[in-house]
Image (cartoon, rainbow, N blue to C red; front, side, top):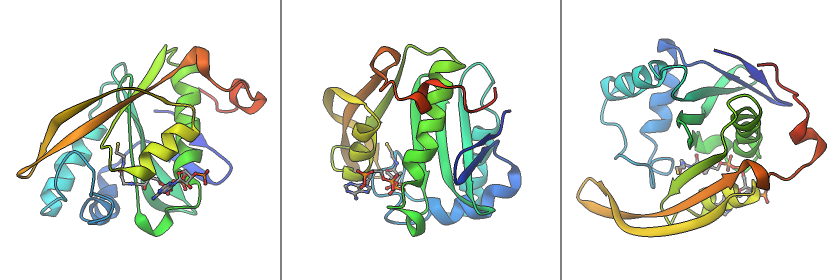
Length: 180
Ligand SMILES: CC(C)(COP(=O)(O)OP(=O)(O)OC[C@H]1O[C@@H](n2cnc3c(N)ncnc32)[C@H](O)[C@@H]1OP(=O)(O)O)[C@@H](O)C(=O)NCCC(=O)NCCS
């Protein structure tokens, strides 16, 4: 799997030894507040989740571990084409890392994988994700109630989409800055 270097980040394939760093994120109450599962209960749960990330077949998705300064700070990618998913360590929120990682993911989605659009499914209470995706050019396409049963609580979805044709055509976005 390709590695991508952005200005500050390294996006690379997941490895089994990422489990400790990911477990820290997947057990964090704030990071998991609007995730599609409850916080992980034990290391085995994170190990299984990580293995499913490692096992994504090449033609079906592409999900990256994100490192900053040699430390794993999250993951971002297309866990199943054309749907994006991302989660970052709350310690590094608000520094533009998620936006930087997702820009690289979107560049590849359109320029390399030739997807026509990328979609997202976000809890309407998840202001951080909605703002992030809107800043990247995503537009809301619909809403649905009671889409996810998380523990014993039903949660809702906002659906968003970014079409290749709607990409902001800034030079940095068009140029193939990241090798395939
Ligand atoms: C969503 C998430 C990845 C954002 O990470 P981040 O590193 O803080 O994002 P960035 O610093 O790149 O911020 C991107 C934009 O979102 C905005 N933003 C970030 N947190 C926000 C918040 N709590 N409320 C409103 N806007 C917010 C930032 O201001 C920034 O906009 P700007 O460029 O105009 O300043 C992070 O909050 C996270 O990991 N959440 C938990 C996992 C999750 O919910 N994943 C999505 C499931 S669909």
